[in-house]
Length: 499
Image (cartoon, rainbow, N blue to C red; front, side):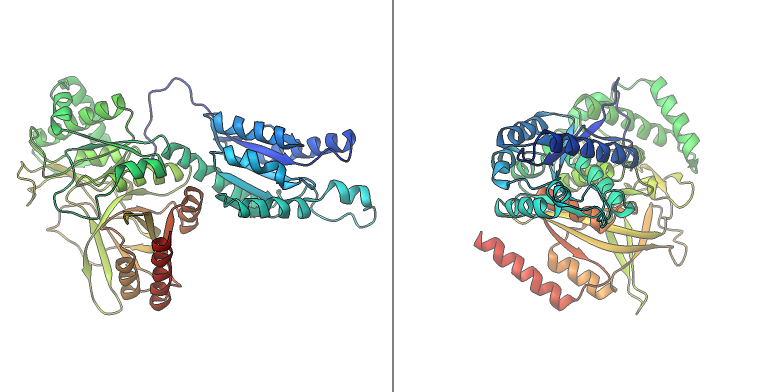
């Protein structure tokens, strides 16, 4: 999913604050050198890290009052998405306690130093006193561990490519967390009746992630849809014709979907929603299940999940934000059925008519076919075969006393044979490390039947998001051993009971 273009007059750059630890025992000249060194690091990183993030001017902090003020400023700044802390020299860590207690933004502990190599020929005690990152960062590391502060640690020389890449990732994930904390989700029409894994505690969800979820009657949306003028439908039809191949004579069915998309877009924009759900069990006032309308909206970055699954919808919007500046596709998916040919097992992923065209291997076609569910007229929808390549599938579940992310590595593959009688958008993939292990691990972990699939993101991105939000994460990859996997789950469940 690409980010939806919002109607704003100004794009404000998000910031990472750069806080430098030291003390004033070595005099003013030492402090000037520290400030100069810190500024040079910030300048270098601003040239290398994503252009959509700014590392703010370095703050050299000498005592508890300065440290607390800096953290208060970072926490209060709506454009600050995270804080980088680095100890240029020794910084007694008790000075950082009050500041860390008021910090509300993700923390990156950068363990680096201003020089790459030891100046063997000239090193003296003045140099040693001034360049004590190896000393100061351990002191800071102890305190953050003692206070159980959520943080990410990056180790290495700040000019090395691997360090720059990790800082870039931190910036992307913290921007997504910032987005997450302000995310609004419209649950239109409630949740599919009797379904368990799509439900949960919406109050705790907002407390933990910031996802504000509220329900709206389908009539609230229908009122907006009914006011859509014909000329706007004509413009939307022109958009469809430019992006997709029309393979139906039922143009009225397509116009109905165009009307739905315009109405949905207006409803979401006016409510400042970046994600939504619907359900086929509540379509009063609509002639069709929203299909093409939903697919086209997802391609613009709006989070969506079917059957009222607000958790997956929100997760989709957040993962799209993580992947915004990367190449690849991200969107809603459901495991539907299997090919169980021995040693060649495959998963067929699809939905009734709600898979984003970002996954299309070729130009999608607009077709009109009857659905066996929903009791409405045949909806216009996009039909296509999916892309191939490495990907991840991620599910979010509510375990009652905590949320769990289940993330698995998968390999998207070309479907082995045509499916002429299955007119839906679809993907096919292999599970890792193998079908039986991958499927059993997912089921043991309680992963839901709805997922967000991404070819742009990797497990490490989900690990960092989980770490910085304090969310339990279960991963399934090429090294997963099912016996060890079950023991780890048992340990997690036991710890959760104890707490």
